[in-house]
Image 1: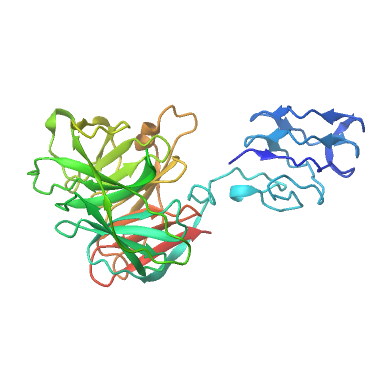
Image 2 (image 1 turned 60 degrees about the horizontal axis):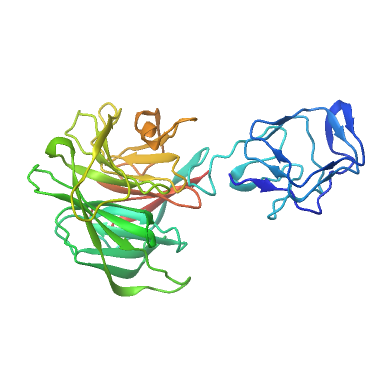
Length: 384
């Protein structure tokens, strides 16, 4: 969660209670440069006198903990519009309350403390959707693409599944597109499409196409546009041939990850190409690790997405959705592939997604999923 800054006009009222034994004198002022470190804990009993003023520069870091007994007066306002009241929530779901709830990124990163039920959002026009991504700069916009043999194009949708445009990728072909992602690039934000499918282990090359994400003014349709694409060839270690349907782009580093699709009963393996990708020679990936999924009798992995903050991963099969959270203190995102996983809601077959292959985080919280096939519903799971 971003650091919260106390506004210059905010004062600690006489009713704010800290430690019962210690009193800070009415004239005490915290200087503009003073920073509360992430580990600092304000004890339950210190009393701050009515005259104590927190200066405009004082920063309360995301890790500062207010103990259960600490009371903040109803009139104290934290900067950026966040009001600390008797149960008012701070940004990203953090509540200043009798018990402090640590940020889970619900309104920033997508991940929730708990999830609601699966919602039907509307029908999508794609008949063999294999990749899905949510825009970072065009709120309420999703991108999707069909599987192998279709046009080298992306379909632009609203969050109710309605099509509002098509992006043709100049210089690209769709031999076996299996997944897509959004991530950083020299132009700002780009869409990445993975030419990574290889059911028969016969493809001569693997690649990812990259195109700059267009700006779509709110409430408008994009129509049909043709944009230049870049092609980056990928190679597995030792020229390994493997099928894959999961393309991941780290939202901060731009590193590329692929999770293999193994035969039933075999665990998937994660591979990595470190950014920046090279446009001339093949980008030889390194093996990160074998994973613990698919779990049990679950079907092979068919799609995934990294949340906008780079801390949580969703991986799916036709009927299962796994969530992985980056361990605290991890030195690299690579650690997420061996982290414990949990199962999160997905529209299970029958009555739901018979061949689920697409999933993407919603930057405002929750995630979207979809299944291949004609007349399929776009599904959404929100924070509960």
